Length: 188
Ligand SMILES: [Zn+2]
Image (cartoon, rainbow, N blue to C red; front, side):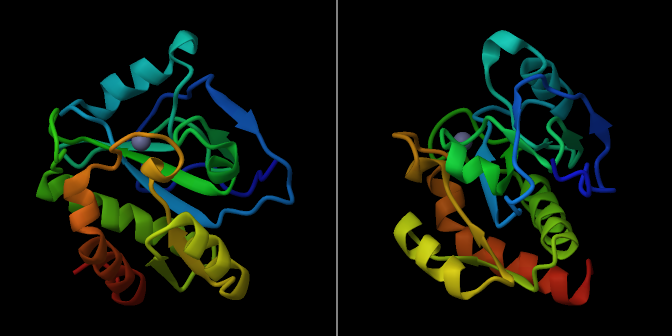
């Protein structure tokens, strides 16, 4: 159990979900996986949903349209979020409020909050920057050679889902650039 990381200090609301797995100490946080919630729901409602055992779903964090950050699964535990044990054991998963329909657009507030939270997570886990490689294969290859760079993965790589949505996929480079700027210079 990685007891060293619970939740970011940026977390506004905590509702612990019973839907998580304990992971071995040898697994270190390596990735970040932004998701689209598919709906403009609040972090509180999302927390209530993840509090239900029958949902069998969770994420480490959630972000809503007011920019509120919810914490549901401690960073040192595995959330049940990306349809992949291998991914979620080494990733911090963040559910972001979005439109109900494709391309699942996120508001500016959600997007900006995601960048701030991502930068905080990357920094605390000792990463100098985040990087998006475009595919799982390329990501795994890159990770072996670049231990100090946190990689970004998508739910759609592990299941036939549109998550994180075409809107976010289109904005991935803006997300990476903005997050890396915050890691370097802080929030402006
Ligand atoms: Zn997802």
